[in-house]
Image (cartoon, rainbow, N blue to C red):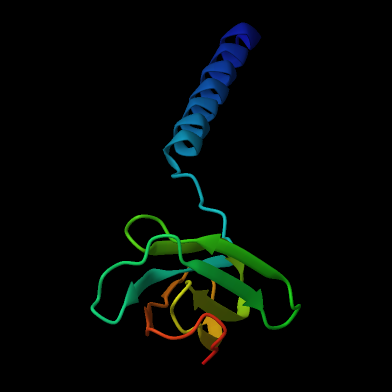
Length: 128
């Protein structure tokens, strides 16, 4: 038996296996990392349904007490993202309207929780 012929066959076999493994590796779709966050978003409107631009929306984590505020855009929309999973309180206010609060809003992994506010006319210092 020719030792040179045997090593050539082993080389071809190793090359074929390596090529097959490379093709299999490259054909596997990338895995998506699991993210432990979600978001809270919504719209702030007045009693007639018109968007309130510049309304202050405050988000408070009910577990930690940490708070974050934003203002609505021209379309009355606000969004808090990314948020760690947990329970939140959201408050919307605007000068000349009653402040409105929603509590015990649960954010779960990968969810978008929609919380819309309809603000009623009221005094600046009034809180509902």
